Image 1: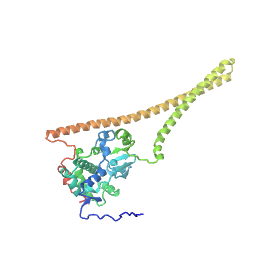
Image 2: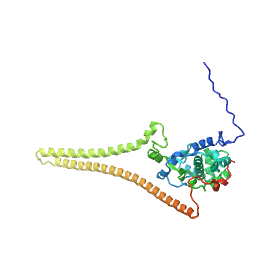
Image 3: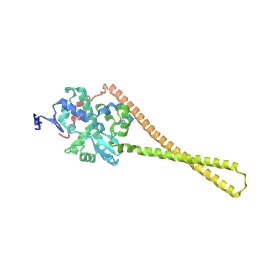
Image 4: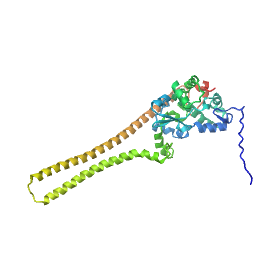
Amino acid sequence: MTAMYLNLEPVQPCTNAPTLPGQPAIALSDSQKVLEFVSRDIVPRDLNRIALRLWWMSRWNKENVSPLHRQRVKNRQIILTEEAKLHLVWAYKIIYIKPLPRYLLSKPFWDTYLCQPSNQPACEAFAQVRSAAFGLIRSYAYLVHHESDFNIAIDLQLLPPDTKWDDFARYLSAMRAIADEHCSPRYAYGEIRLTRLNFYAPILLRRRYYHRTEYHYSGYFAAFYGPCLFVIGLSTVILTALQLTVQVDIEAAARNASADDSSPVSDPENATITAENSLLKSFCRFVGYSSVAISSVAAVYLMVLLLAKFGREWHYAIRERVRRREEVLRERDRLRAKGSRMTSDAGDVSRLPLYHVKSAME
């Protein structure tokens, strides 16, 4: 038999060729590999696909992002994730945040790929990468407001450990000037609730959920325990009350029939017992009907409260969408009056403040 061996000798990297910061296996000059990696790394494709419907789930406001210290005030656990689709997605007591890649803090990367769109192949793909990069960086301008936020980001490894606060603060000051039209559509919104994404995923994404948080049957079915127990308890109370009322009526009818068949004998003691039984029957009927009424009112109240909350959220979302559209139209008219026009891609990056910001990692 012929023995087969694997060549386990490590590939010697070219020390002279610059590499993509944070990815020593990818040459900075290899546009195809850089594009493939960065596109997988930072482009939120799913959210971009449904960007026109994100107003169903979140405020149409790029500033709807709480700083890192505020996340802790809200008692949220910050979960580090490398999936761009989960960046700024939250559920209950957790929020997912993607670390800022080292290459987005590198001036050579900016000069090669983000500031020279016309000299690169596959311009549309590079435009998607640039808009995703702008959006991710701008989100950090809202996540890191104070030095305390910066220290939290360093502790959680959201930023490279050798980043300096003074340099990074100057870097972020220019990032806040990035307009929505220069970012991925997803970043026109801030934090997005995961439960709503999972709810609308079958409609918008044609799959069962957006992101699954439970991977065991016990955790999955535990979410149904509360609603099921509430329905069972409410049904038990109503049915028991109805059974009590019906039973009292049946016994009352049986006693009346028995009294009609018997000879009418005047007995004060029997009259007293009959009066007491009549009073007990009335009380039992009152308890039964009251239980049914209270349970029904409670169920209707909770349902109305739920519908009111949904209605209020939809009213607010529609009002915000109308307001933002009016703002966009007014801005468009203003630019047209000045002889300018709005673009859908990143446009001329050299006109943005980003181009003139020295990288914090340089």
